[in-house]
Length: 557
Image (cartoon, rainbow, N blue to C red; front, side, top):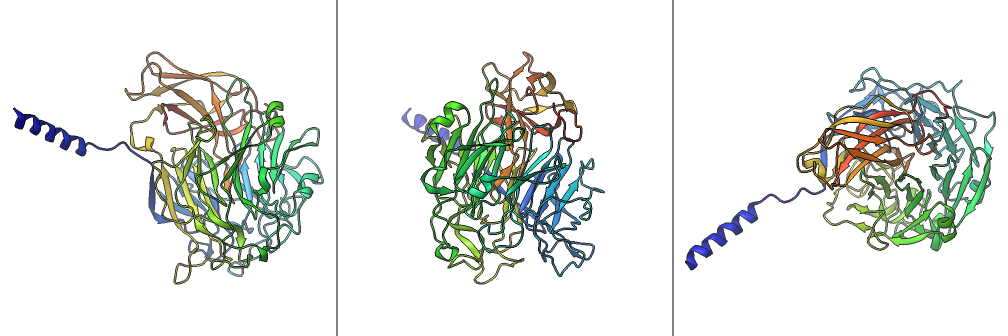
């Protein structure tokens, strides 16, 4: 009998060891290369991501010269070059209320490899909605002589606001070595609303480390801004600013001392906004030659709730698991925040500190992402348990974006003044390898949104057909429906990124989902959106919709 029992236990142990483990997070290195350094990224359709680089000698070719724009096909993991007229290096962008992608600003410098190139610092680049799932026939439009910004802007920020137009903030006029010593201290709009830019006292106060300000459209229509270590709420309509508390502990968070920031998910009925700022460096704005590539970044995250009670309380401080400069914060459909990319020491910009690593002002790439859970207790919100290492440094000039498929597309990294190949002594070359970071739900049966209306009106109940795996079609399951702007990624910031949870119920037969759209275009600025259904942290693929009428801006909805 003993032998029989032992045999049974041994057999059970063998079965246990052989059982497949639960799926985890995975990095997937794609066979195709990006062809350009993917330093700016925006999802422009359910199947396409638009990338921009600087005008350089990248390997991807178009019309007998190197391309610096490209479309990445999310279904086939292949790249198609786009012809760009102006130098899009260190530009910004967003989607308008009618679905048009607008890229603004960029590098004033030309490139001898393409004599037809135009300066980018007043550029406006238009990519209209592309019906082709492969991008065939879809092009970028530019007319610098008649379509341009009011003021020259390199390293600006831009977001879609409540009327579906873009607010464009800050930047610099011409090439400067490190800090913003030739600043654009103003705001403007696209499409234009005024004949001259609006001056900004905030941008003047936040010099010299205020490039790519972190800006967020709040659910009352105002805009929260962070630059250097300072913050304000700007009232677009009244043209007033309210000064808020500084980031604690002398931490600075905008280029060239880059942290990242994100608007945390907005939830009904009150949609109270909170902003999270992570990374950067605890330093004074010293002469760059007094700074080093080994200066430790900060692990600090600062969080503020932007109602009267939260503003009175000020910033709440917590810490990442490691120090990071140039991280990026990106929403997951379930409301968690991915913290990815960046370096443990140093700064943004190129070859301007006292001891660059090759050309890189930073060192010690951080390869393992973390997850931030906003509703967890303070001190328990950040974890990297089960997270893999990317194996690829993603430091200055890298990008990451959530895709409609539910995973993250990661590309770029180039802390060099030109295209720099791997080789002896080159620690941080120009990076053309492309990865996805795939959440565990990518490897299990997922909910499906079977169909959605092309356009959704504000403040309406909408019912759509769904399909659920049997293990998720159960009473008491946690159901979340998120309406998301997937944002524009560049320079450690995901501008316009937004997640609004919608009240939702699933029918008793588990065949339909009913949700209530946001009340107006201040809570979710009118324009393209992606809807995800998440049940017990298993997310569907996203459904691409137009939130609002789809009219050209300005449109108040």
